Length: 244
Image (cartoon, rainbow, N blue to C red; front, top):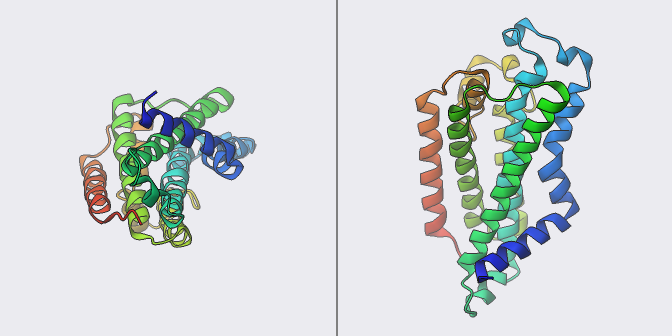
């Protein structure tokens, strides 16, 4: 097995062995969706949501949670802790360059986010009949661009934060903003129009996910913003990242 493959295997084991990361990162979004669906009135069509059920309307916001928990909280905290503990510095003296550890972290956390989102979609569909995304390609493009933007922001926090505690503080603020604009704390139809429109452009772009879910092609401008955010945040993170 290559050095990178071994690191991915090790990081995956550490991810699974951390009960808080495993439960909150992988299972919490699905538990939230299933818990809301257990309320009968939330499974009834509502005029406020264009005749949809709340459980159907809210599913993309739970996807936002699935991506944000891992990309904006777990990833930057772990990388900042590795720097603070000297792990990255010590690896620079070995044949295994620390950049491979960063790649392994990205692979594991991206995989966990994909699995968490897949669990939300599958559980909602199987338990409550939440329809699958009707515009499959649009949803795939919106999801890929959105998750890339989120992880780029997470890497930027990891690059800026000198300690794990600082990374946790910064990432918590970003996470709370993403959840607010993504309609997790308060459904988007209950938000003022101006705030809801801002949420269209806040990674991972919940409106693009919702549009594709209901069968409409996502708007180009929000997708372009996700792509620009991913490129800009990723480039800055790569430029300023410190190994110690």
